[in-house]
Length: 143
Image 1 (spheres, rainbow, N blue to C red):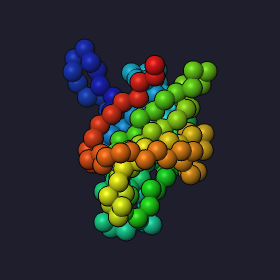
Image 2 (tube, rainbow, N blue to C red):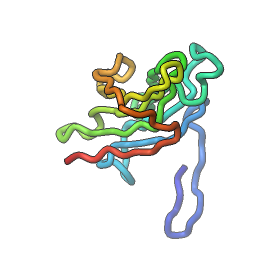
Image 3 (tube, rainbow, N blue to C red):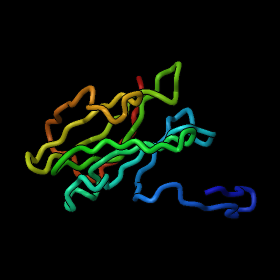
Image 4 (cartoon, one colour):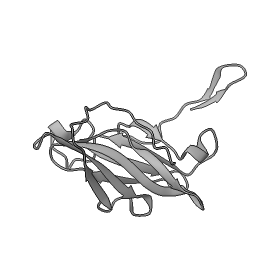
């Protein structure tokens, strides 16, 4: 969507993708500016079982190449909204964090993915001591 903030009017609205998308995020350095990537949760591709379609994957759309990349978490695994930590010298790349709930094991983990290998396996999975409920929202904050 493009809006005129002064007049509060919608200038343009168009669909970019034909899949459901929730909780879009961009690098903090790019909020309110032109950016290359938007990362979001989605139901995934046809490979996921119908019960896993709620939030079984994260995806990233590249506005420059118009390419969609997707990472599916697997059967009975559901992810929260992604959060991004950017590399200082390359704010459009970094690490993507998602809290993943494993329904079969009734446990939660934080999965960390390298944005330069978005569709590859996570570089780290951190077990959490308690289950984090679906719908939990978080934000990455560097110290």
